[in-house]
Length: 251
Image (cartoon, rainbow, N blue to C red; front, side):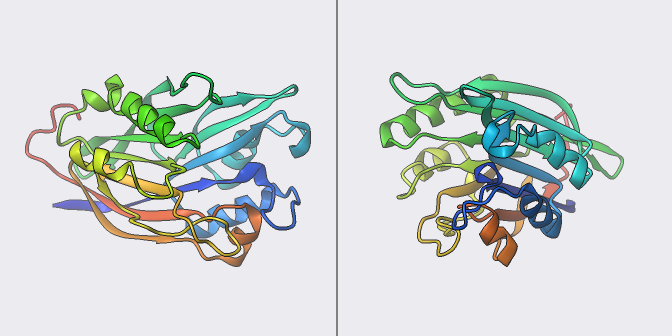
């Protein structure tokens, strides 16, 4: 039987710089995320100490403004001053986390951040594994990066009933990665939802996938006007329910 709903959002926030007006305003990101009220947020292109974003450590500002008690950040790309990368904000306690390199030769550094969250359910807690990624621009690069992610310990060794949600900016215009994910038990929450460019989306770059004892209720692309101005991507939001299983096995 499913538990109460859990909302997960994924969004490439483009460092808080608008896709059309090119204006930096992190408050537009804050207000947009607040509007959708996620329990867990996967964010990509989050700045840390970069001049273009006033040297802000954006993960701290976002967590504080939105009331998230738990956060993770990893730097993907280092610049002359600061860098940017992936972040996870969570209302659930983080049991453990994994900083995974997805670097392929001669390409920009890419990483994924995976975490085990402790989600309250009636009579106890369940582990929810979440993974946030920003994949490369080349097709062969993305395939190799996905292979590295799926073969990493926290995903490969997860019990078949353990709920897992992976997502982020896949940069996968033609859904070439879907077949590999389906073969490993994942289903797509977002299908071909269009998210880029934000002002008039024609490409579905941002995705969420799930497997295990977890049920999808509903998924959609955010159409809030402020969100469409805040970044060059639109956010994707999905509502899930974790299912109870007979043998929790600590998972």
